[in-house]
Figure (cartoon, helix red, strand yellow):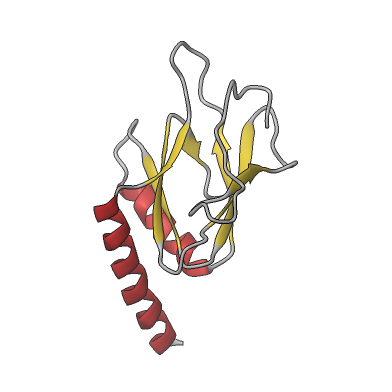
Length: 134
């Protein structure tokens, strides 16, 4: 874990829907968090307090990367950002260090139940569309 992160609650349990760990690629400028989706459906994940750096992130699936870029462009300025992980996919997610200041915490959470359903439906639809185009 990078030294600028005061605390992080990560789970590497096999039954956890989003096991994660910090990568050795983390630095004083950004944290690189490896996240896997252990579910047979797409998951929508939100990041608050830190800026996602998709250019430095490495998605296992190009569809995940494309959907995440679209979601990031739709995210309100200063609000939480979101990314999508397809069933069984993973990402090395780059999170830029937030500006110093009181109360600056980075939170990474799975989105609520309704968001899961929407993410799964959208992912299934776009996966089918991409497969037919290829």
